[in-house]
Image 1: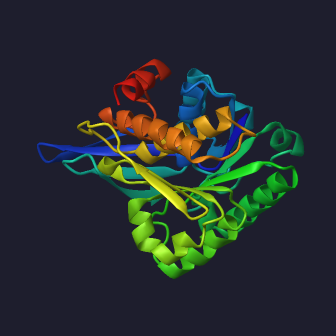
Image 2: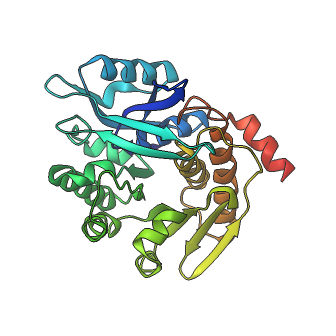
Length: 302
């Protein structure tokens, strides 16, 4: 089983027509996106997160239920609003973010029991809560407890300039959790922002790097490989990295306990490349996730 812990929020995706900008509400939040993708790819998954007891929070809980997720670990807080992320898309489908999260629910997280951690093979922790002292302490505690139980900890950098104005502060914050992570994902932009030296210091971990239209890369113990993705015309890249990460994690989870070989990491990146690319063919991070039959068709073609 995979356990995803972190933010669940509403992506408000903007579109301008005739001088008027309207926003379409979509379910989002990187670890929730990953959890839904893992569910779509046939893996056993649980999600832990918090929403406000408001219209948006109620929408998200209904969405999770309709998706077939176990909502027992989604906490509804009566004294908090649900976090919002306003998303603007370029003509190429690339997105930029503006978060509404002052005093919101995403970093006031429910407790995770040892029983739940003990049932997981991989514990995937989200990054948004790290910007708050209490959220950082929570995430580090979960990672420590997971390792004490012999679990694999996965972490997506998922850096947002709207959250972290100071790069050096962000680096110092992330390092605390990265020290306890076994699997790390970054985008090509994040490698550039954080610096190659910073990323190279993670050589003892499995590192995945998404490269957009160029595909994806794995790095592990001084070895690496870049693999191309499928050729598509993206509509909306929101959640593409999450779909990639879920695809890669689903392959690793399927082979939990097996040696980490170059061939296994190639399979993980190839699968992630396809799931990430196909997820960009419609708007939103979750609604256009491909099913397994579609993924395998593309893998067979390539």
